[in-house]
Image (cartoon, rainbow, N blue to C red):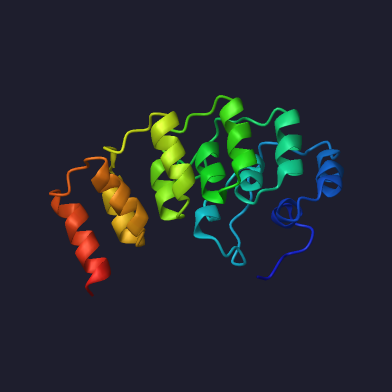
Length: 183
């Protein structure tokens, strides 16, 4: 990874709270600013200008996350592809950050696809069983949870969906499953 030293992305990835506080002392600093698109960003999930708190959540940057929260970052902003804070927390997979996001009252309704695609099975089960996020979601972009599990090669997720009674007769899910496993 090529880090552009001193950028907001670099500061947050390193969880450098002192540098973030220094940047925040500038009169034109906005806690709700976004991380600009960069050729050096290796993670597709971060290509769509996430806010500082979203970027902190993804990178497990607890000090920066707490600072953004303390500075009253808007928890309900979306990136350019309509991803919200809870999706960044789930994609990052840090349980402490996820718990903080939960305590802040953020919705987890659109997070199952993220958990299944990032292979965070324990988080996936927690979302389904304790947050009552249904497995029957059929997102216009990502499709069904079963199709996301199959497309990402998440066998454990596919098995879980089948065990929970998800209808496997949906052609989309089966097509994706067979394309992925029987190329």
